[in-house]
Image 1 (cartoon, helix red, strand yellow):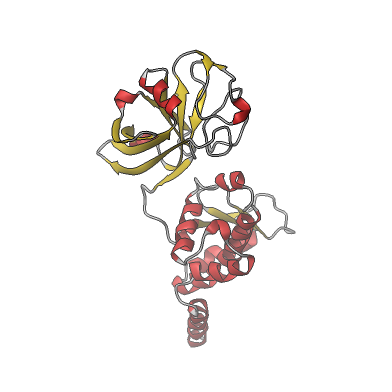
Image 2: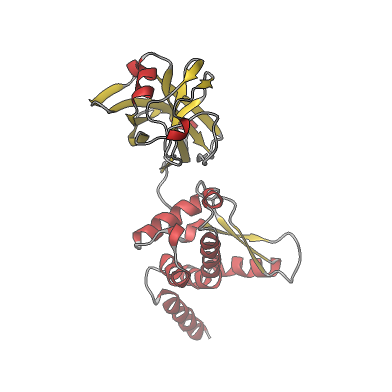
Length: 307
């Protein structure tokens, strides 16, 4: 889950409001590696605020890292005092620390959101901060144990335990159960594959054609996969200003595959222009520009020779 801007009953150091003058807190997973049983993440914290530094040093606050995995429906929270982390840089204002977190492989998969906090480890009856905005100057606050004192930007990581699939394999063809002939073609992309749903007659014809080999499959790409892919990318384009709607698709295999393939073409799936969608869709599905036309010629040639 990505944190949204919200109001707190006390000043909270974060990147989305101006409660503080010049202080900052940020954290980042800088690398991760895979052991026999675990995924091991290296987390780096950067803190520039004297009051929060002192609270952490006297064990009245602590660093916290929260993992949330949509695929496995797991949430994990890890907390660290100053003695738990390795200090790699310490100046008059900024302190940089690192810590490793090991998580069993089976708990995390695909898209994982990671949030970084500084939380209160005790009741603080008169919390004041040296660098708060003038609106809070001279005002103290009661902070409860577990309250958020700072948070950073959410980091989303993608764990590729399996290789990225080919463009065509992100699709599957299904048979409509509605029996409504007025809807000959529909698309469902709320699963790991984009499903193209056809009427029973169309489904049976496709099933017969697929048995004829790769040339027929390449023609099917143009007939079915191409319009489906264009529709999917137009839907993503329509959500470009609604980050949380797009996030719902990030855990699906088809989204990750398309994101990588579009990236290799020099584009960003979240920022495609309308006029780019159709040519990009064609390039994803066809390794050569003339591929479907050559396949159609091969089919016609075989049919003529069989007569």
